[in-house]
Image (cartoon, rainbow, N blue to C red; front, side, top):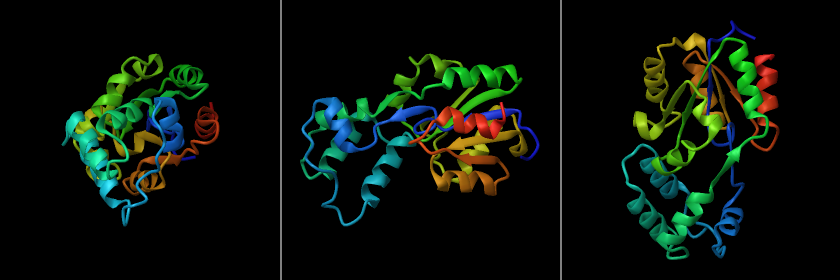
Amino acid sequence: MPARPSLVCFDLGGVFIRLQPDLASACRDAGVEFRGGWEHLPSDAPRLALIERYQVGAMECGPYYRAMSDLSAGRYSPEEIEAIHRVWVIEPYPGIDRLLDEIESAGLATACLSNTNVSHWRWLEGVAAFARLHHKHASHLLRFHKPDERIYRAFEREVGRSRREIILFDDLPENVEAATRLGWQAHRIDPRGDAAEQMRQVLRL
């Protein structure tokens, strides 16, 4: 492993926080009938573009729910989209608190850098493990979206660390690749496995 970092940075969903595995599961937990996804669209690009606009703070919650409802061709009402959205984030992965204890005992600072939105951010503010992080940054606050290089550079400025001091854990290969190109120590986490243990093995705690 390269030189030991001074800052451990977590992506949130799929690394720190467990998310719904799919739309059908989210519908079940939201009490909404599952009526399929966005298979009627020629590609997933419009949905992903809409999510990115929301996650960089370019849309408020209400307009986002309405736009996503429209994109579903009326399969889901705006109110149903909101209900699904609210249950998409579930809970911290098992073992995260213990991992944070070990990181802090090793004298390392902690942070997050996540593509997320104002609604889920409000939910996170009530999570004890999230409150323990020393630095909290996200796409809707920095106004850039991973894997855009600008979000990583903005994060470096905000936390006052050089790229060589930061180790990032993320579940998306493109985000890991972008961070690695910029000189961060970046590692992919498999959200289907034991996230805390995967990070512990990398950090050698």
